[in-house]
Structures are given as C-alpha cells and as structure tokens.
Length: 246
Image (cartoon, rainbow, N blue to C red; front, side, top):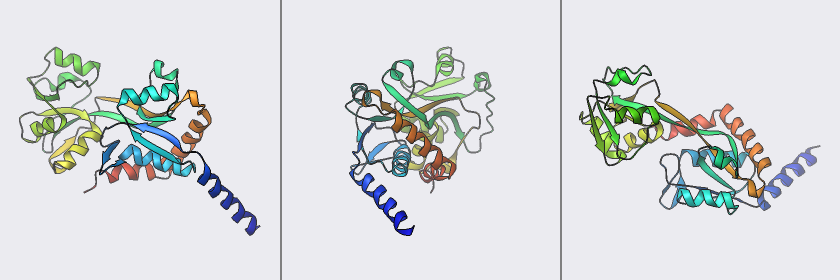
C-alpha cells in the first residue's frame, strides 16, 4: 500500500513536470499586478500562482498592454488573462472564473476626521473633494462631479498627487481604488495618517478569463475549485494582508 501511494505521488509529480505551461497575460496595475526588478509580482499574481500550484499546472505570466492582452485571448494566442472585468462582449470569447479579486472604490479621509458617508453623496456636499484627472469613479459619482455637488473639487494629475492633497489637508476626502490607495499610502509612509470609510462607493468584481478558442472550460472549473480552497484555508486573505503590513 505504501509503495502504491508513493507511485501515485511520483506520477502526479511527473505529470506536473511535463504538463504544457499555460500562457497567461496581465497588465501593470499595482498592487494587483506589476513589474518590479524585472519580475511580475502583486496580490493577484501571488493568488494566481498559488491557485495553479494547487492545480499542479505550470504557468507563465507576461505583462502586456491591456488591449493587446485581451486580443490575444480572443484570438487564442494566450490561454488566460487577469484581472479582467466581465461584460457580454468578452463572454463571447472568454470563460470566466469565479471572482478572483474585488475592485473596490472607497473613500479616504484623514485619520482624525469625523466625516461620515451613509451611501448618500449629499452627505459630502460641504467638503473639498480630490479626484484624479480622467479617472472614472462610477456613474453616480461622476455625475455628482459634473453637477458640482461638493464645496470644491481639486483635480490631481495622478494617484500619488491626489493622496498628497489629502494628507496635506488641501482636500477633505478622496475616492480611490481601495487596494491601490493602500499601496500608495504605504509607499508614501502615510498609512497611519489616513483611514478608509466603512461604506464603499462602488465594487466591481474582476476575474481570470480563459480563452474559449483554446478550450479551457475544464481548466476554468479546476481553477474555481482551487481558488475556493485557498480562500477557505485563509491563504488568500494572508496574501492580501502581506502587501499592507509594515
């Protein structure tokens, strides 16, 4: 019996060793996925690697411009892409996993702020708001900017700049991607000076999307099982927390 168990383990190892690597693509979007010192890293990257390791499926990960990557999935030139939003057009050529990681838009304020948001943007009408030029925060908030709902609106040229507006006191509140914001605050050594309000502005799920042209529906199903497993075992949450620990 012992010899049989060893043989099965050896067979699984050999199968994994000679399995054809899946060619995955992603894009630059820290802290989810980004290039550092010539290597692809990030929260979503670490989660994806752990899931495929649990599946005994080798992978390669390539960073490409988003439009190029999504076209490669459509044409079958690559096997999967993450972190992808779901829409009817993409579902024609991609098999989507369960939710890989949520993209949450939160409000950030200074740590000692008494600002309260109750899912009503009118709560914020007396505040000075900071936003990033050209960035969409969802239909409702974008409309509130057009309607000049707030006391004042300061427009920053980039993400780093908008958080500096907040920490310097030039604005009272900013909306931003939750994990992206925490990543920026960590890099600026300002995590202790800012807090995230409990009520979220918006949440959009993102996924691993597999090329239908390459017949990966079974791979998608296996991916879902392993993703569920690492979530239930706490490894998923541990990866996310590791990116914002001191």
